[in-house]
Length: 227
Image (cartoon, rainbow, N blue to C red; front, side):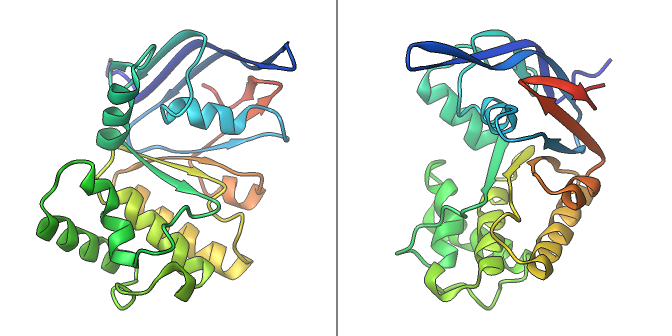
């Protein structure tokens, strides 16, 4: 049997707040295959963002097993975690996280800097990716000169420029109006159709409905969709 791209078993995560433990992920079992689109839903405090951060190697877990593309993700040092993120993962956030003093093409090219990609190659790849997301005419625009939807397209292009196996999105339409949200979701549909794996946190039912599978969390446990 092929190993899932994302494989979690008996995963636990606890934070300490004010000296008291807060159990945010409880014995999670989850497999996500290559090319799947998955929504993570649940009420505030259910563990959605923590789960996404663990999958994204942004947060450590206390116990259990996490294999990402067959690689053990437990106890990684910072350099190894950063290298795996750069090789395997792309991130899209609600607040875009673009550098305000860099134009669109430089923002998109940034992950390639960390790969020591030669400047001409990374600029070419950034331009191609911006064209792919419909912003070929906005290469030299600063974030302040772009609409919310355009900023999110730049963020998606940046996430994809390294050709990651997995795209992780945390409320990617949360800061957008309904019309712009539909445009961004249509773009994400295209990305999944191209074979990328998409894991998306959302509180919007219509966004979750566009994914192939919905995982529902409650008090840190999967109550639906984990199979």
